[in-house]
Length: 466
Image (cartoon, rainbow, N blue to C red; front, side):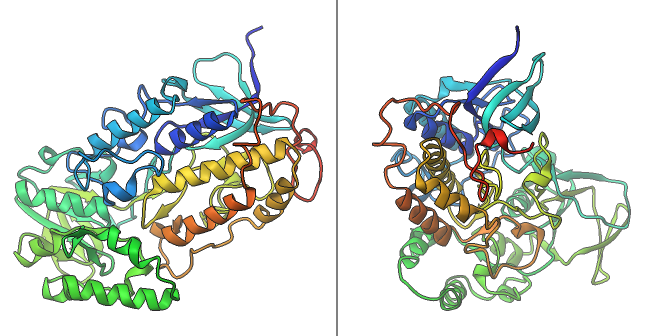
């Protein structure tokens, strides 16, 4: 019989930083799991050698070494303050080796479909005749799969590209380039283009704050980390950060950039020291939204136009998980319905790790999320009262913990304030206590006979309708 039955296991999909954090946590706490990775190597979006990777030659971390690495495994001291994507990948590989999960990853294993059944999850893997069965499913495959492209009237007869397909300056050389967007990737590409392109223009929907990576000779996130320890209302903190940025960088208009119509904490930060200077040098032409294309002419909403050979869309990604019914994680507005973007409000066997955007290390958030998932799984398997407490809590669904005040845009659908969100995760972990560490005697958690409680029903998972 060729059915591979893994009903005592949890299925982790993806072996980027989120999947590795989940695998490491489950391994430490004795939760049986499989970690399935469709590519030939680990690293997810940080691995340039795989189709999943979205990094390019000039990709560097936008948070510093000290505040990016996992809390229990700091990045090496000989790394630069802002490591490159190759150093980040080497670090992830070292992390997986150190905690004994590198060999636990099944590479070249593509999940084609995952469907919820009355007893857990049926997972169909490409090339396997029969499905696998798992007690629970952890989505750790990221959300940088489906590029978001604006609908622009007319037809552009030159070349177009999304930032996920950008790899290096050779793609920009000797071309008239227009880059759409003002996020971190778009701005990196704009800066790269100034070195090799015939002309460079950047189309910005709105003014944005360009935050330098260093202030007063120190990494900016180190200063922010200190300031976040000072208790004050968000509105006051927002005003202070905005004033501080203006003092350190100056008004956008002085560089030739549009002024933001919001305060600095109301959008995801764009970390770029160089771009405002290049605008001031006349190396970058700044334009508003594109109104239409006509041949190789790019016409903007202010009536100006430029000739271009290449348009690069640094316009982000649509939230989409390709192998499951997305109604399980997203509402009609395209936003997550999950509690903390992690826990399904009704089902106790579906989790997402890393499905967030924040102004800080997503790696550390993924680690804390994984610990919270593990604590809940163990509490449920032991039929502990904390499982019922948390099931009731997560039934609130997408409660906007620290998610208020952001500019209304697709870019902020997964956005949280890193510091407030992380503090909330830590409070919940303290409530679970030592669940899954000191309390776990056997070194292996058997979920097969557990009663994962559906909120409000008080029934074993096997009795919940699929």
